[in-house]
Length: 86
Image 1 (tube, rainbow, N blue to C red):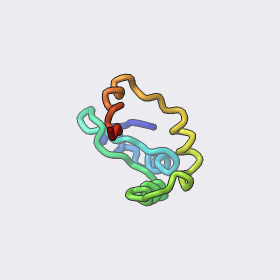
Image 2: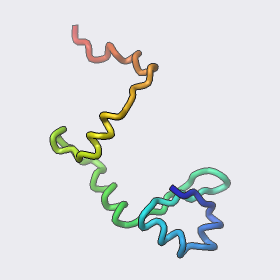
Image 3: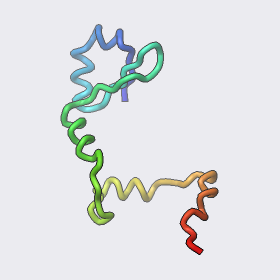
Image 4: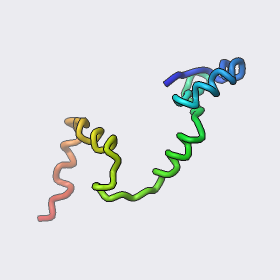
């Protein structure tokens, strides 16, 4: 993901608009991430997931693969007893 300043975006908007069609572009303001420029197709895809409820068997294969590669941080062990109903 490309990261550029707002002034760089103003100078070369056409270039970054084209890039955003395939990869989001992070726009910084005063050295801090501020907004993201992305294609309308990606925006619509993200909005469609915004409150979408799925059964586990309905999850996209990519999401399932990502779940299988996640490692749970050690500090999360403090929540191990949260589901105990004894």
